[in-house]
Image 1 (cartoon, one colour):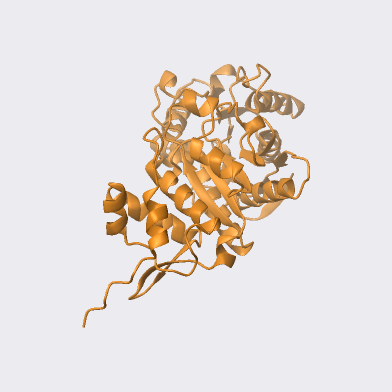
Image 2 (spheres, one colour):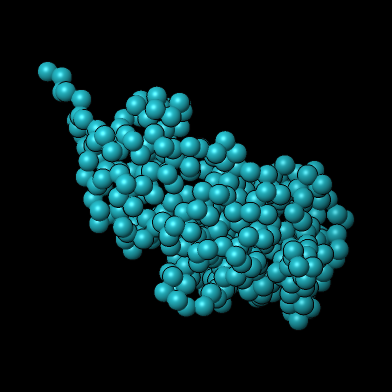
Length: 394
């Protein structure tokens, strides 16, 4: 026996008909922003039936797949709820009033390649921690050009912050570009970035350098090579030295303090342009960089790989060149705790945590919401020795 279709409140239909999307921005975030704003302002009543995907597709002349993605996000945020056998309903007023934090992505991390696995791990950790704290996260993947991203915030993001539908915004600046709109943004912000305007959270790469070089020295290395994105001429948007350039300086300094031999041909320092170096991904850069180092007549007996996105490529190259580890080469590799890394030979790891980064981001934005001044956080690293034990950390 079929059920009669659930009647949709006339007021809900009238409000939904007023949706006028901007063709220059992504459709899913605009739908999510429009519906969530009308729910939180009670223009769409709570605890009532909500239109089906097919009805909304006909109402707005938008593809059902796009509607489905938007409704799924609204459901994850707790603004809609699906009842088996009955359909979709708007959530209670209490749920709608829960604090909502925006997560702005310069690229669509869900569709990005392996170079952005760390940022995806941070997003997953943000979701877990926000749920435990009773917060809702709303994602913004910005499809605009880099020039537009740098100049202005997405209109829907700015409107949600101005109307206080968003209490704050976490910025995942995967490309490292300067976002000129951040200082004037109408809500508290914090960025996951090595540097930038306002509050930001980053892994302390200089700490990582010290731990890695010290571990190689303790294991008897007399010479050290480097594969990392820390180019010595890397400058920030203000023209000052980027933290990556400072990390390179620290590497040279720490090697000198420990009396370790360095040669220019043992240093493969990447920069922001992989294409200029003939590598399609950072993993490929790691493979090519190790192959170049190992083709030299003289080779280092220690190697520091300073970014986890390069490590898999380095491991593949070591296996391809049949290097005897640790007899001929000792390794200090960066990794992130939450990301699986298969290493078939002994190595020391300098370990960061995406969960710790997520905790710092949420703490920063909540402190700013409560009126505290924005502050930046540098996250240290821990050393995991060849037996898998935590040796030390900073």
